[in-house]
Amino acid sequence: MQLSGNALKLFACFFMVVDHVGFLFFPEIALFRIIGRLALPLFAFLLAVGFTKTRDQKKYLQRLSLFAVVSQVPYMAFLYAAGADVWRLNIFITLALGLFALMCAQGVREKAAKVLIVCAIAIVAQVLAADYGTFGVLLIAAHHVFLQRRSLGAGAIVIFSVLYSVFAFLVNGFLWQICSLFALPLVFLYNGEKGISIPRSFFYWFYPVHLAFLTLLFYFLF
Image (cartoon, rainbow, N blue to C red; front, top):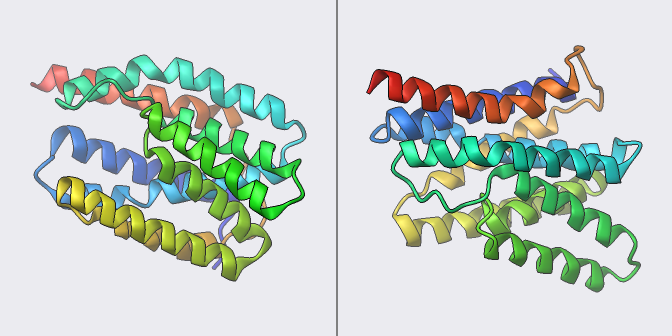
């Protein structure tokens, strides 16, 4: 079995919704959060693919940045409803920073300089309190490497995921993040094709719209 890019996007959206439903409505049921851990690796991989295939990287970055702005209020409202810290930046910020890191690194020849650039931007993501912070940016970079050298990239993905899982365990006592590695088999099934025709705007709008819908539903029910 092989999976197209749009099929992976639909999987990523599904896992994300399951995660957010669990976070807001069923915080005591770990299974929702465990399933949700598969979303970020797929989005990171798809962004790395988009980086290599887009005709205009700057416009790609502009779209991500625009929806980062559009999504921030729904994201904060969602966090507020869940009783979480609202002073965080949404995942589009993380994706935009990850893309920016790849764009900056591609113009540099020295590998050490590339690593330093990516790490610096990853630290910025953490300082800005972007969703997944440093780990999110590093995961995007690891998936970019995966597209070029599978063994090296897969190793980096595993290492970053394990380290972040240990960090998350030390902070909140949960090891959910280690389950993100279950997304790796899906990544290996990617066939390089776009797949079924779905408007690109659908995937951009899906994030803020589903957050707003879940928040409104929560207040309606409770």
